[in-house]
Amino acid sequence: MGDRWYSEAVVYCLDIDTYADSDGDGVGDIRGLIGRLDYLARLGVTCLWLHPIHPSPNRDDGYDVTDFYNVDPRFGTLGDFAELLHQAQNRGIRVIIDLVVNHTSDQHPWFVSARSSPDSPYRDWYVWADHEPADRHQGMVFPGEQNETWTYDRTAKAWFYHRFYKYQPDLNFANPQVRAEVKKIVSFWLQLGVSGFRMDAVPFIIELTEPGNPDSPKDFEFLTELRQHVQWRRGDAVLLAEANVEPDELPTFFGDGSGSGNRIHMLFDFMLNGRLMLALARRDPEPVIEALRDTPTLPTGGQWATFLRNHDEIDLSRLTATQRDQVYAEFGPEEHMRIYDRGIRRRLAPMLGNDRRRVELAYALQFSLRGTPVLRYGEEIGMGEDLSLPGREAIRTPMQWSFKPNAGFSTADPEKLVRPVIDSGDYSYEKVNVTAQRGDPRSLLSWFERMIRTLREAPEIGSGSTTHIDVPMPAGVLAHRADGPTGTMVFLHNLGTDDVEVDLGMLAAEADLPMDVLADRRYGEVGKLDSLKLAGHGYRWIRLCRGDTF
Ligand code: GLC
Image (cartoon, rainbow, N blue to C red; front, side):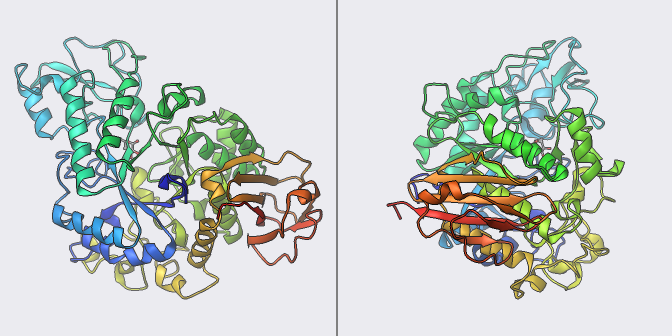
C-alpha cells in the first residue's frame, strides 16, 4: 500500500440513527454500530464516514448542529464514541466524521446569543445585513423548499444569511474567531482519534458573503490554513470535501496551483456521478469517456472520491436539460421520485429495475474508475427507497439486517422507530436483508465482498492513473485501464444489452499471463486478448501484468 491510505481505501457511509439500535429505543446508536463492525470488516470496508454525530434538533438530519464538541445523546456518549474508534481501529477500519461548519442550527447557543443583541460576543460570528439585501431570493440550495437566503430576524432586528434552510444560519468566515473555533473543533476530534473529515458545503464555507452580491468572493486561503492545521495535528488525517462546482474551479480546491496539493486531499466526483447516471440511462459509455477525458489534472496527493449513491438526491444539475430528461425518463419517471428540480431521491437497485446484472455492472464500473470508492449503507444488499417519506428521507430508511421484526434494526415498537423500515414490495426487509444474503455465495452481498477483495489486489485503481482505451469497441462497451507501479489492470464494461466480442489484441505485447480477476461469469482464457467475449451488461476485470512492486 502506498503512503496515502485514502488512495486505496473503501469508504462506507452511514447514519448512526438508522444503522443499528442497541438499546431498543428505536434510534440507532454507537453501541449498535460497534456491534456491526465485524460485518463491515468482512465486507472489506477500510474507512467509515459517519454523517453528523453531534447534538442537533434534527431538522436537516443532523446537518444542523447545536454543539460541535459532543455526540448526540440519542447516539450515546463521547465515551461510546472513543470506544467505537478503538474497536474500529482494532479491525483496521478508520473513521471520518462530517464536519458541518458552513452553518449552525439556529438553536446553537452561539446563534441564540448572536441574535439577542448587537453587543453579543457572538454577533459577528454570523452574517448580518441591516437592510433587505437585493439578492434575498437568490442562491437557494433547496429550491421548492426554500425561497430566500436572507431572512429577517425580529429579535436581532436584522437580516441573517443562510445558504441552506433558514434554521441554518451561516457562520461568518471573515471573522478570525470563527476560523480559530473551526480549527479547535477539528483538533478536538483528531485528538479523539478520527482519521479526518468529510467537509460539508465547502464552496459556501469559503464564501466571503457580501449582502446584495449573489457572487461574493471566495477565500481559498482558508482551505490552505485548515489543511496545514490538520496535518500538524495529525499527519495522516484526510479532508474529503463536498464541492459541487464547475470543473474548471475544482483544481483550486485541491491546491493553490503550485503543483503540490496543499488544500483538500479528496473531492467527491459529482461530475462523474452525473455522467455515470447518464451513461447507465443511455446504455452508452460515451459520457463516462468524456468525464475521464475532461478530468482536470490533480496535484500530487489529490484524489477523487467516486460514488453512485449518497445520502442526498442524485444531483443532475450539471447535465444539460436534454441529458437530465433522459436520466429522469429512465430512472425517475414519476414526479415524486424527483426533488429540487435537479435530482432523483432513489436508491440504485430500484433505479436499475432490480436487475442484478445491471447493479453489478454499475458498481463494478464505479469501483474500477480512478479514485476512492464510497459506498452508501444498504447498497451492498440492494436496498430500495420509501417514496412515501418526505424529501431525502426516502433513501434514509433503517438498515435491513434480518427477517426479524423491524428488519432486526431495533426491538422498539414500530411506531417508535426513527424512520419506518421498508416492509412491503420487492425491497421489503423480508426479501432484502443481510442474514439472507450472508450465507449465499450468489447474493449481492457476497458479490460485493468478492469485488472489494479483488480491489485490494489492484492498488493501481486507487493509486495509479486511469485512461480510456481508445480503440474501436462494440456499441455499449467501455474499455479502460489503470496503470501503477504494481502493474496494469484492464477493464471491460458492457452497458448495452447485446453479447459482444472485443478485440484488445493490441495490448498483448504488454501482457504477462493475463487473466480475469473479476467477471460477471466464467469467460474462459483471455488468450491473446483479441477475441474477448462479453455478455450484455457483462464486465471483466483483467490483470494484464504485474509490476516489480508488490
Ligand atoms: C450538504 C449535505 C446535505 C445537507 C446540506 C446542509 O449538502 O450533504 O445533506 O442538507 O449540506 O448542511
